[in-house]
Image (cartoon, rainbow, N blue to C red; front, top):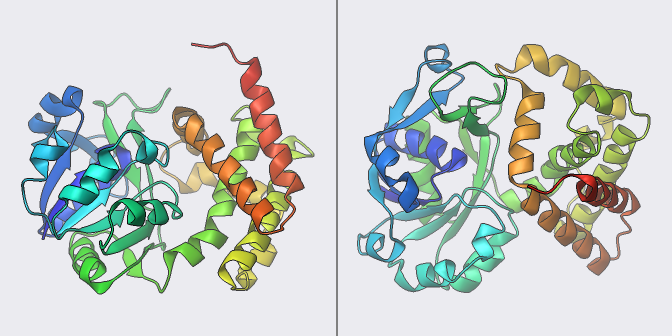
Length: 327
């Protein structure tokens, strides 16, 4: 399989490594400023492997810096590892739809709702989607181990990355990633699974930002975690309305106390500071956070689902950001 990954950031590089280890011919479309480093080999830290927690593994692939010239090569799959906001900037997605040839499309990041946008600009394309169960970030984190700058990623034990889509895309993708050591699985519809799973992380992150990215503040504040859980329930009600499916039974057990316990346990279960990761990563993608939150509230309004807790969290986020100094 020959695959082009557009967006060679934290997620794109992690997937590229496993595609390559599974035998794929991997091509990366990078920004011109990344070209020299990418051609020299990108440092990666797969944290599940103790050998590479402080010593980088290097990703070498075929590097492109111009989309139009890259698409002169025939690809089986084109993977989009770009944010929801980047997906909407410029005309590159429209040009991709025009020049992709017979390649299928695989969405690696952003929102699962972006599949509709991709389908609009890539008519006739077979489109697969991924629900990420991976934490990937630029290393070292502030205050972390002094290592060569690169990308670190961690796959939570016992979890599998869910994927869905047509066989033409998903069969070679899943087979290749499994050979490459990435725990993946096919599910009937990622969009349904993500509609129920994503609010757990999303609303916790919203509450954490309101608590100045402090786990201690989040645990001790009498309002933030209850607001987060209430917002999750609103999101699950919306998911039921949109998908026609009932929420999984296990979601009934999510309570503020359970989230507090997870925050405490993370310091022993995760091989890096989860608190530092959240603060560092989600401030980098701050524009996407608000964009997706606004879209979520709009969807709630369109489907007749009241979302006062989610609205309050977003109000607090905007209020907090308004007091921060501008760079």
